[in-house]
Length: 500
Image 1 (cartoon, rainbow, N blue to C red):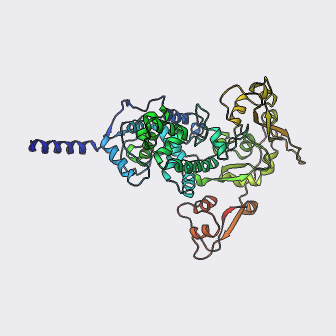
Image 2: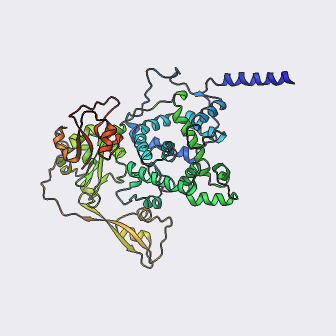
Image 3: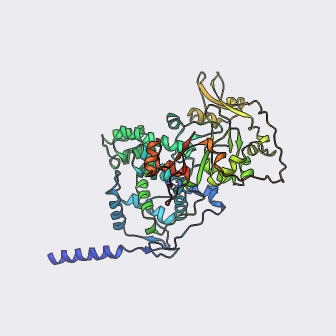
């Protein structure tokens, strides 16, 4: 019997070593993460993100890869390898990154069935993850929470769920409103990458105060704290995710396993021969400026020679490709850094550029958004109110967090209406459609100095010291000055430290 036991142990070790090497397969995986799964569906939304249809989706293969797989190879590993790799990640994570068959299903979905989409997602991560990490660090939250946006939206800033959740962090209207995200006919701040990230961080803090467990925070973020509390009661008072999982809705049951799988995949891309698509822009290659007058994406595109798809990707909160007037809360425009100098130099030309077949027909340039409270009268329907204020029923339901198509008399509704703005006493430049506009390229600091605060570098300064002195962050200084890995702080040099 002892010899038999030793033989069995020896056989098990040999099999484990044999299976640690990757195998390659072209057959379809049978996975527990099915195509009708919400996590899979949101990943599929990247097919509709037009940015990747303009030639930016080409996968970039490194010249000296860590593993010398063939380009079309799809490595697969034995379960013991998945488990050991997750155990290694778990050792340095506040999350319980345990492996099981449900997690395996999502790992195989990302690494086998939807590889092309994962490459696109990796490209988007180069734009969004630095911003996520900076915000999470500021709020003293686990950096792994950046992976939650992959489960929520696959990093698609325009993602919309079947229930109406929007943006990178998939905020429903009431929750977004609770955390200061404004929604109107023309602006949806749930789709604003920065503002929604700050709101998500504040929501994470609130949920952790409620449950004191990060796995439960994940479940509550997806299903709502009320849903988690109900599952706790139905489970007889259990307090861990895996214990209450059978009592959660189907979507939330797959949510935490998907999060664990994303942690694995994003840390082991090389091992699965997964490489990023070419990103259109990274976090340090864009800049933001305050808009003084109404603008359309058409105007910006025509004068600066930048595609409307790229403008929308960088400014996803503007729902109708219009930046409206908002005197109380000025709106901003994000552009590639190499276009910012041209925008500042040609700002008046851009504002005055009219395309007769776009802005004038939409009648939105000379409109100012105002908020109105309307009391529903007896017999009125949402469709009647929508016609009265030239909006849609969906708009009214979104502004007021209404799911039903009926509304009771006496209820007060928030309505956003648009009123004419007095014309600006400036001569409008009419430009024929076929005529080109000469754009003056001028990147001299004197044209944009008033936008920024500057600091003169002194001997012995470091980014850390400068950030501490000026109440800012290292990441913000790097972003404002487009500092790469090999930046050089020369004494006497002026650098941007913030905006005026």
